[in-house]
Image (cartoon, rainbow, N blue to C red; front, side):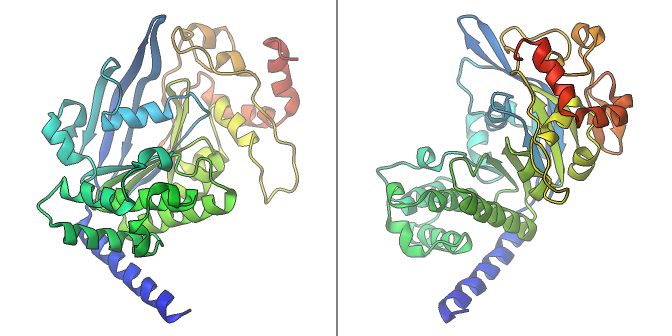
Length: 365
């Protein structure tokens, strides 16, 4: 290791210790949250009766295909949805309902108690201001800090995420995609929040840079112990990084629990289908199996299970009545009428012919 690299590593370790002392992990409780978008055809029920908890220091993953409501959920937690959106329920941060906060209270809470790593770093940074100036502005907006003190804090944060301080003088377009994402991570940490939410932070990055970003986020979480939520469509990322997971489909939570338990013994057919769609490097070469069809319209969703049309095990009971989210093990819940038969369903779900029957039924084969 060079003397310069050793110095950066030493400073980074000191910063981690400083963040650990200053940041206080928070508890998040989302209770019966609904978030609908108004359209000419009616409300789009993007998030529909969602409840989950993140205990202090937890690392929770939220996974689901595009359009399942993941980003809307994140925006609802931060109160970033359009004014004409319909939102109800509660988002309690250490017992305080974020949805009931005044604008002043909300401003004091964002970035200091909870912060966001966005999925499009180029769109999140103002192209006409230096990156360092944007970080300084965030720091000074939340406290009586001089420009020089804020700039030094930005230098420390860049050091922590592996960027040289000189880069603070640059504009966003002078950064690579991975560097911009690291800058956003630095911005999310600069006020020592107790909860960090990463919304698809590796979107549009190459696999090497993705791994670097994921590793950086994971090491920071392990060192600082802030509460974290990682939102992604890639179930393999959840398997690699998160202690617990929530599986969303068509605006609903269909399964949740410890990551190892959910992936080893999924109890909802959708989770079984997701597991079929990513490779197992320990099990040799196998065929990846796609889930036929697409999610239902969220303007007029089906009255029963929203996965019923694409589910190989669905019956009239599934189409007529919505299954409740019920316990299937320690800390593990699933919203399926036939969760008690999951062991047998898992074996059938491994066969491509099982899903081929769905394709035939819905007219795709």
